[in-house]
Image (tube, rainbow, N blue to C red):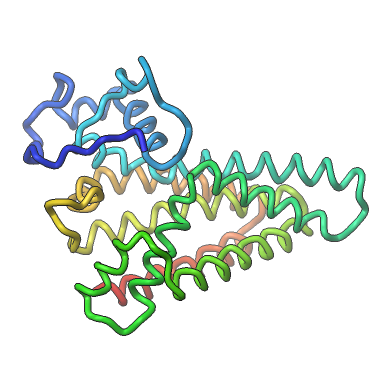
Length: 268
């Protein structure tokens, strides 16, 4: 992870400056928007943002907090990579091997590409969360388990079942055509990065304030961040609606909202 987080300074107020301009004014500039998007891309993918580009982007805990607005935009980038890999694999193998297993192979290739692009960041988080919340333990014990780098039984089961379900569903959707796969990837990757921001907005940060690397992201997400994130999400879901229709969109949104509500209930 190329980002270094310094937790010693106190958080700037809305009147303090970052890179010479008030934070809310800088975010309004096109280059400020791009800087925060690139910082989010750097933080959540393995796409290199180095050298002079990294110097131009800059970094501060306040910028890291502001870049949360672009998490759904990062999801769009990941979805595009996954869609391209799926389309290429489907075209290559489908032209040479006439078998119903081609969509399954293409779905595996697409999933492998997205995991490689993100460095397994989200899969690692899923395993930690399953280990922490899977057993009936106290909140403090659950937090300790989540910080453990080792994977437990609940984490292993969650990873295997979730990845298997994702690949199989993507293969089934692929039976309806590549366009449906593109819609599923875009909607899924974008929406799955917007809903957690809503949880972060309403729930308190419970990690160790002295050592937590996520605190700059998790301790304060304002309405402006959510509005920008929602705009990313709205654009992506509008594309899904245009491409596949309302029923396809509803079939994806409803399960996501149910899981979102369940997670929110568990964490309260």
